[in-house]
Image (cartoon, rainbow, N blue to C red; front, side, top):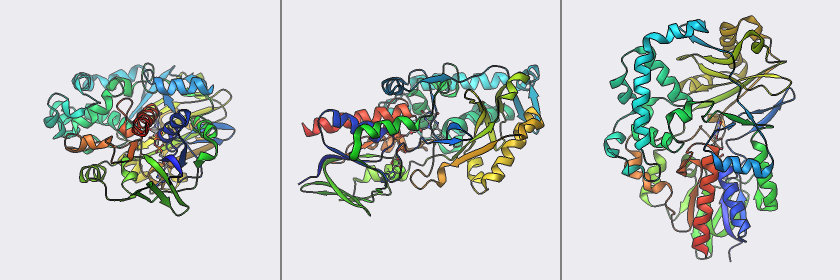
Length: 445
Ligand SMILES: Cc1cc2nc3c(=O)[nH]c(=O)nc-3n(C[C@H](O)[C@H](O)[C@H](O)COP(=O)(O)OP(=O)(O)OC[C@H]3O[C@@H](n4cnc5c(N)ncnc54)[C@H](O)[C@@H]3O)c2cc1C
């Protein structure tokens, strides 16, 4: 006899959404979560009295599933402030205001032309069935790096483009196919949407942080959510799917695995999964990111006409934002891609020194007078091991893509990587949970 109708593995936004939709329709659920908290790749901590998101944080236009959830739960958004001068740091020199235009002048044309051409390609890409994108096989056979190298000869323009790639994927353009990058961006409405603040994916933040919404969803599910329950095995038996780990086993008529594809590949399946599914997850790595916040008594840089944004292409930290709540000053930024891999070998104190040196170079010595520095290396997190999400190396989508969402008998797949809108984002995770719940409900009917 099954214990429940559906066992959900993972209590990130995907798993929690799937579980709530199933419960709303009267299905009994168990949500097994490895961590002692819910929320997965979102995590809010309080430092110096300020709620800080160390994982997912922003929400943009078009992310209607996340907006709807926040509205339902009564969590307000605040607009990402972008007033004042940004500072560009290149080759150890800081450029501000009108001098930035001078730095960009030599590279602007190539950067703009390549961006426009990539955007046109993104607009043709099909997130629902990537393999039907025009020229899919050709675009999937080429890395984004080779595509860019053919178009951009100016080394600084190439450096700038590479910086935006890293800020979206947390890995370099050499690691993904043109098709994979285009489909990812298309699922969010375009490349400029992903890289933008106003009108883009970094437009708004949640007051009090994102993790509270996961906790509220879990609270609605009550005892059905079981934190501290790492799942290591799924066995299909005559009574259903036995989902087990060190803490025991729960049998469900169906199971939803709501993890990144790479982590789903660390679970043992009996019988073994179809070859195409296994081969797919062997090929979907995640990027590397260390996100940090520097907390000050106040956002003092604003009075100096600075926006809080420092852009430093090629540097260990390539971009920062002013994310100050009322009553404090906060600068948020990222080590991404190979810089995160290198910085992951340093201590937080050493990383803090890299960050404050950059801010001091950009804004002056006052940048060193901070109250606190906090960061999180997501690659070191045993139940994440890489972020922001999986990316698609050459050949993967066109050869193995359909296996991403295809159920394997009574086992269904969720997680932001399986979304067709907002892939890689919280909004995508929610949508994937909705889709997996609908699949299961129709199978159980
Ligand atoms: C630094 C950073 C910044 C980001 N910024 C943004 C942003 O600004 N806006 C945005 O929309 N998105 C952002 N993202 C991405 C966003 O956080 C993710 O897309 C989203 O949270 C993924 O949700 P998920 O449910 O698909 O996966 P996850 O959140 O990874 O959930 C999977 C869950 O499964 C659990 N688990 C893993 N293995 C097992 C196992 N074997 N057994 C049981 N449980 C297991 C994990 O602990 C986790 O709770 C960011 C991510 C990071 C890391």
